Amino acid sequence: MSRKKPGNFIVVIVVGCGGNIGSHVVAHIARMAIVDHVVLIDRDTYEEVNLASQDILPSDVGKPKAEVQARRLRAIRPSLIVEAVSHDVTTLPIGTLRGDVVLGCLDNNLTRQFVAEATWHLGVPYIDAGVRNDGLLARASAFLPSENAPCMQCSWTNEMYVALEHVYSCNGAEAMVPPTRSPSFLGSLAASLQVIECSKLLEGNLDRAIVGKQVLLDANSQRHYLTRLPHNDHCRFDHQVWDIEQIDQDPAQVTLGEALALGGNGSAGNARLAFSFRPQVFFRKKFTCSSCPSVTERVGLREALPTYVACDRCGETTEEEIVGIAPELAATALDPSLLGHSMVSIGFRKGDVFTVTNSDQARRFEIGGNRA
Image (spheres, rainbow, N blue to C red):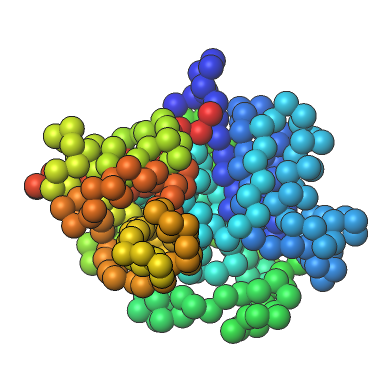
């Protein structure tokens, strides 16, 4: 991590930007002169109950949180480049989290796990924050991916993994456990801790940052705790920082055959292709014409495949049939015509990272290139 140099954009990503912590974080980030580009991610919409604990106005109720906070940042600093992403981060391509620092303002460990693992594989520093209303506790911890460094899960217990599905909702409507109902001032305290550490990382002051540590403020007793997080040799996470090669083209401009050929020999050959993060299953469908013997095949993620295609030969209706399911696409198992289909038609999006394996060699690629 180095100081900002002329011509280099500094990108900060805030996941959970609209909540008890995140809504306080964004205004601080807007006022950091070193930051050029902010990406705001939040799947939720503001409700009236949020007025008591989040930094918003009554007129924001009913609007997407990411868009509300994006408008706020632009008003504070019009020159700032701001992206609003109103989706669940766990459904987004891993490359969406490629930045200089990612700030997690999240309400559940399942999403924390996703963001922490994704940023580690990308080699991106991650700062997590949290609050506990009972005891008035605010905390922040920072993770910098490197060999033998502690990750978030190094200190997790078996009980924490069992409880991963417990989501702490802001209003309790869908929560499996009671919401924290933390006051606005506690979220603001955690946000301040988080942004202070973000500033240190962006300025290159690693010796002063809480990398591999957790800072906890007990506002009830005015106590401060700094804990070093240990590296766990038996951690469930693999701690791999991936070597990812960038493809500057959009998924619509790259064919499956071209992607498979990236394996090393210039052609699809015996190459195999799979998603690198949270592997997904590919479906093969066969569409048989009801009037002539024509058969059309399609391959891709289930949501990317059509339920109907017109016959290429006579235009009549076709009957759909799933003929195969596999965790990877092998060139030798595909009809040659499928190699000409674009990656977007198969279900790949800008920012997806995939692995191409050819013989004993495996290489990872991110499609869509670097964020401008």
